[in-house]
Image (cartoon, rainbow, N blue to C red):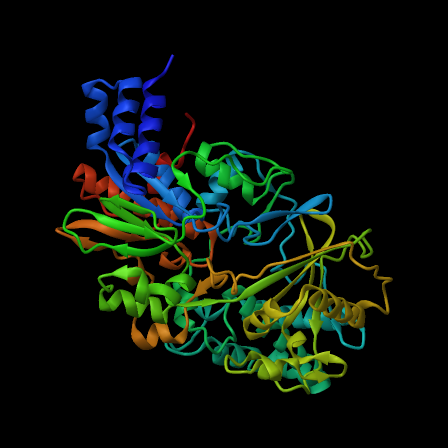
Length: 557
């Protein structure tokens, strides 16, 4: 028996792929209706639904679209430019296990929407590993292969703990670059000064490691481009900042939770695609000039008409394409937000070894580079030729490598992190050169202590060169303060006759959780709620926090 849902799905397919995209033959539509008759109530139900096109199939787009589909008042279409959903969530197989090539952890417990649902489904690992706690067994090691002695490690640990509290916990000027504050916070401590009397070289090396660590957290080229106020704007949630997924659960599991309310588990890494998601649909124009409809034009010539659109593409893509993507041009404040909010380049490299060659009590190797080398690799203006200059047998770009660390999902894999100008250059180098150079670095630092085999599998991310991301995640830079633009400016919808015709979601649009998956998730719920409120005439205030969306996120049917 053909149900109403089956008829509706078929008619939607004709409308989406025929009438809108290909101007379908009227006789085809007539024939379909004769074969699948709809009664007047069913036809009225279809006609009354507001059409919404969500652009981007990352966490923000999936969450917004799924919430609107569940609400039932909307005819939803999601357009994703690539051949997969997930955006900067990208779980991939590596050998016999898997790794997270994009987002890796769930940051914090309290008021974290991702943690809330993952915990309810028993998807998280509570083993207690926390790479941000310096008392954990991450080893500091220098280029000569010498491990920092425990007594020195413990002293520097105490120094870094205070510095890592950040300017939100101490006195700082609101418009001060973060790096200025970090330098002062490190060297002005009495304990640092006492330590430096005996070993200023090591203190300088550890401060440089902290610089690389902070740029990895922020996604910035250097910590002088991040702002102190930006650190204060970000809300670090209570609990473990690095909750890991419990294999076979992974971040791909959460994508399925968004769509269907239940997880998928490894080795399955991609949910079943519902009929309202269209892959390989790169949007090239959003025309919101009409008083009646928004017209979405795709690269393949397809067109979609809708009452509302939610744009969830990354800040990097917005920066590259806002001048041609939107017709008419966006309001001035929106353009300023796109220009002066920042997005950085952070990449991970995964090395799958035939066996685990490091001891169980070591969770990572922090690299202490010799400080005599000029720090030009932190400069946004450094040339590629400059980064390729070899010093002591290694190209200068290797100074951007943070270290090598274990993976919760892969027992024989280490992952390495690199950020800023060095990360962008590495994306352009061929895979063999990258793998060989990283292994040379690893062996120089720890090869005297361990017999390191060749990796049997290798994988890396390329978020900056990816045309559908153009970066890893956003941060708040000094330009945000200079031009007085913040996430709320990016999140503000463009209205026509009081209707929110053009909405924006994504991690960069979240006022306090930028750079996180829970920020992306909550921004998608925020924009779904905005359209629901408009459809129902509700004047309820939109919240940035999870509790108001709890019932929306539940998807048990």
